[in-house]
Length: 273
Image (tube, rainbow, N blue to C red):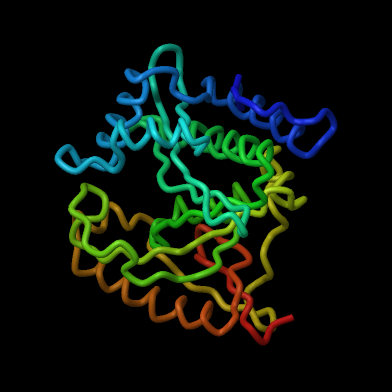
């Protein structure tokens, strides 16, 4: 089950259907997705994110910040399996003219990746945002992490919009240490039919085939996270290669229209139809 919180979506609206999708996604993942109820649960969210990112001395978010976010109707949620917190997601509103929520951080407890907890969190976030009149959610992810690329582009039907070079600068956590923090900024158009379908478990149409006019592929490694530990030199080469190929394509008006595990990003160039 899931709890969107106030306001209640109008029956028959896109937001109401999004709430039903969120309930189904949570049930499928065997979790309850809701806001933290007290300071102990807020601290549990912070502790889980510290565990995931390996930053005990420099937590990704603090309890005080999350309490302020919750009070001001920003997005703070946890996925609970019984009494255990197994996932969390935090976002904040962008400037008023944009009607956009920036999803700052989301993570799933070690050992539970691949069990649809992350999907339940994002579908809940969509329903929460639609209930408040938010039109889009944006977030960043490392373009080298293929499982995240597949999740964002295929499972959620979000669309990468911009390549951000070394966006956060040096980070000393267990995930990013020793590498530059290039990111793709994605935009999730919440009421788009393809997004609604994805949140019901129906993936987007397959991307154009290799060799189609105006379509190029940008490959990424299968498991950059393991490569960073076993062959950091090769990992840095991949960073430079993907940056050199993907950043100019997007800057010139190219659009990432798909992701394939065996071929990487599918990009329709600025000159493609």
